[in-house]
Amino acid sequence: MKVRDTVLGLMAGLLAAAWVGAAATEDPPVEQDPAVLRFVERSIAWYPDSSYRVLSDERRHTPSGSYRVVTVERDCASNILSGQPTVVIDEVTGLAYLGSVGQLPFEQSGAAARALRPFVEGFLPEVLLRNMDMRVRVSWDLPEGTRSGAVIPFQLIVDTGYGEYPKPVAMTSDGNLLVMGGGMPLEGDPVALRRQLFAASEVVTWDRGGDDAVVDIVEFSDLECPACKSRWPLIEGVLESHHGVVRHGMVSFPLTSIHPWAFRASSASWCVAEQDPKQLVDFKTLFYDLQRDMAVSLVTPTSLDFVAGQGLDEDAFRACYLRDRSLQAVHAQLALGHRVGVLATPTYFVNGWMIQTPEPDWFPDLVSRLAAGKEP
Image (cartoon, rainbow, N blue to C red):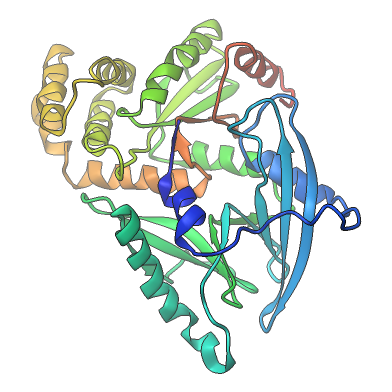
């Protein structure tokens, strides 16, 4: 599985700070907050027999109000998914920010609060460019209705080399913490919210199944990603065994910082699906088969050969491929992925439940339970 280094790499080493961690073992037991535990369980990747407990819960005060920093331990059989996610809760707005959390190297003194935004505008782009060759700029322009209080949401505008897309981030108003993620209402349901977003989105390509399906599997993947290739047979098998019950939606999520030809393949994917969504699976399978030998220079001729072989309109494909409408579509797909918390490829959402490591011994049963109207 390819992890987005824009998230974990930044938090691991670039903020020059200590992680928000658990309380010391000699501290008294921490009160278990059911609302926080429910929010975390329904926000992060689902895995069988996971257990959750609050490790630490600290309230901090700022002139803009108070916020809580809550660290939760998730224990399960997956070494990848076991861990300690941290939630920053803005008690002014009721929004919870779940993502990698690190301490900003910002000095608070006197009038220094006025320097917080200029500091962030200079610090983050410089650090990401120097350490990850990632080009971003900070934007404070947010969608209408966005609220801030003790936590200030903003966006990183990421330059892919083909254009830009927004990634939600936030910082506490005291300049202490940076959260690589957007906010959701703590009392809301992340599972239901994601399902609604996918149903309303214009950039999810539904390539298998009909509108009468009772289970939606939305896949965020990258045609250059080996893990996406290895997981696809399991997903395809579930689609075949649950024919008529499940529909599949594809969303490109090219990891442009580590995969040189992924964005071009994503653009081509969009243009193929624009003519015939049912052809997208065959197109994806072709690139998976050629993954070891593919290069930037081969994406265009390979795509054109596919278009000709499938009887698609070559002129229409050329008018779309690497042109504004496909570039905008792929950037919108990337933005959608970050909005719903995608950190790695492949990531699947089954009726809104995030799945990162589907396995044959439980994934088909999960789909069957959801098809029967049950919780995982």
